[in-house]
Image (cartoon, rainbow, N blue to C red; front, top):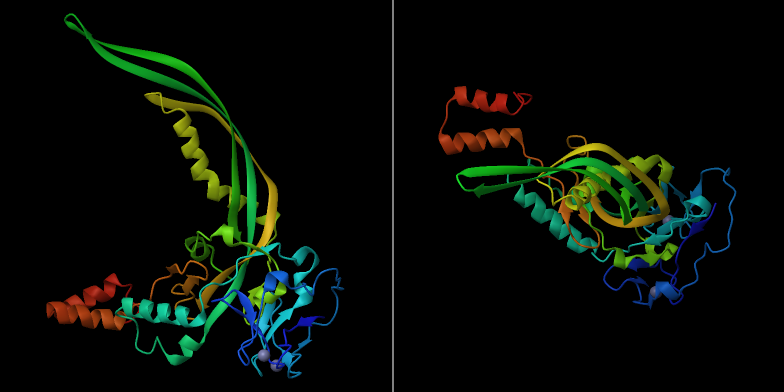
Length: 343
Ligand SMILES: [Zn+2]
Ligand SMILES: [Zn+2]
């Protein structure tokens, strides 16, 4: 069991990653350290995997409550950022990380704006408690480099219509078309945590991959991080699915010269040439409203916000009533349109 905590060499406080400067910083005395130049405490360490699942905070000694996927968290007693080293080594060692560049205050402002945009959010939805639950989370992703060998057979036609004397002539030429294409896609991201909804994570893209840094545990200090629970082999089909539309579009464009094309054979062989385990930054607000359907999530590097604010059925009905001065009958109609559950 290894708990990593960054104590300030000046004052002994717990240091955390600072998204504004990209440095490890001490909120007590203001010291800042450049992470890229720091030695990584996990370098050359090995851990046995079968020890008891109990971690203690180095600052206060309290037991750190985590679930099996957590790799970094905050001590619930003293607030120190703690990194669980043994869950970040060996096969579980991330290759790279995109650090947060958007801070918690910015994320909270974005969340408030998002709530206001859903003008009809249920009363009490945007409570202080909920705002406090704004969590900076490193979500595990696989980044695939996919090499595609593609062979396509098709019958193509070229149609030419022209006039000769009194006649309009339609000339149709037939072609056997064969294409052999090699396509490479680099850094195709697939979220590797079952907890995060795939569609939500897809919408947070793109992440700026020029911001990828060599992984160091200090980037996680003060944040929540998870380890993958689906392997790159398991998720390869999803990576393939993500590029399939691009491949189809490329094949079509390679036959753009024909009036019509009928495919007679298509073979796509996709191989993962290289896969990197990376951690990508996401701000999330957790709550149980409607089974995560309305989760607020924000790309921690670009600021892109996804998710739909919830709309209260009761408020919608009242709003409709206000707009149209309508009768009980139309309220019932609205109730029916909305699934009826509220009535
Ligand atoms: Zn300090
Ligand atoms: Zn503690």
